[in-house]
Length: 404
Image (cartoon, helix red, strand yellow):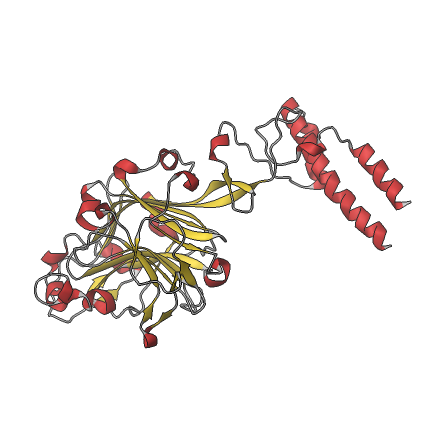
């Protein structure tokens, strides 16, 4: 009986594969009725029409092939539709009061330019007393992610004395046990973006990987601990980008650019490109990170279980002020006065603004095989060429013979 059930399962699997081949043949020959009949009987089978896009195929370390398929686009006047406005206390102790969606739009903290550029900023009108909190905005995607390719196209990112912006991903709950990834972060008039991973104990950055950034912390035994525990002075693992065009005035003067994060089970890698250096495959909407060269920073699964330490993330944009980071390093920033004094005058915040063209997220679409020079078109990359020419009747005859 066990042998019978096993063989039946095998028959089912192989029949579906053969039907997929026949389905493609029927599709290409215009036999839509046969195609419909097969799909009604055996269910929809995925067919990936690559057309002329063979060049976008990526290969994972395990040898499997895939393409990056666009999943979500946050842009233009619908940008905020799928965003949640965070209104809780700032967990970084910034001098900030995060406002509701209604308040943000009514006060023009969030709005759109005529060309569709998304604007997000803080209160730039109110004069405060030193130490008072300034109204600002923090948003996060309603959707959660467990990986993908994230490409943010920016015209401007906030900067200036007392200003602490961030573009990052994290879980809404159980921090830091589901991890945090700081993709863009800086303070004051800094010229270099800082990339950081925050986890609980057991995750390490492997310094032997290829990347162009400079580690913030000194490695020990070839690694940097990524755990975040303020009691022992640990604040994650960080790398500073080498380019002066990665943050602040120089990034803005170049017309902005893109920040890209590739997050899968093998690694979390981050690149930045100023406007003139954006790869053509990104512009074409067919990203291929394997052609971009070494990332600015990378956290590899060689010393950190990526799927264990990073999960259920939302994408976050915020503008906070002073706080644990920008407040604590203010004296070393060469900015005038104190952080609280600087924040009190809205005239000092003219550069504290996000100008966003788009945020696009891509997911891997597996490619199981490539059929070339055979009966099945090379445009359809799903079934193995080993099945070409196999008929259902011959398959069933063989299987029945095994059972009896």
